[in-house]
Length: 162
Image (cartoon, rainbow, N blue to C red; front, side, top):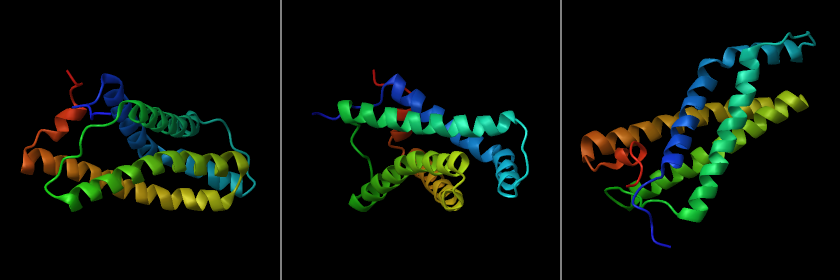
């Protein structure tokens, strides 16, 4: 199957939707952390829309990631761009890691929250740091392509394939 030149509107919308949800997960994590702490201490917790938002947001991140992977499996993806093989390999590893974390984080969070499994909560907390690092590398890489290499790579996530 030949590689497409760019991404579809749906792929771009799913990318930016997942990005916004991930940002929201970090910004509003205090509510679920407080609810988790209260629950583990045997205290009763009341309904909090921010907790619901965290749970639903995580589920949507996973759904968007799986949806994007299914589109990628059917359609393929644009050719990786980079100065050299090492750069392309690191970009591929970062993308694999991002997809894995967008699936593993909601799973570990769900097992912790709905199953009360402390080990899953600890794993979730470790994975959130790894995700933050990979997202930062992803953003730095995109900015490097845009401002240093000036190769137009970032435009593939701004405009749909014509």
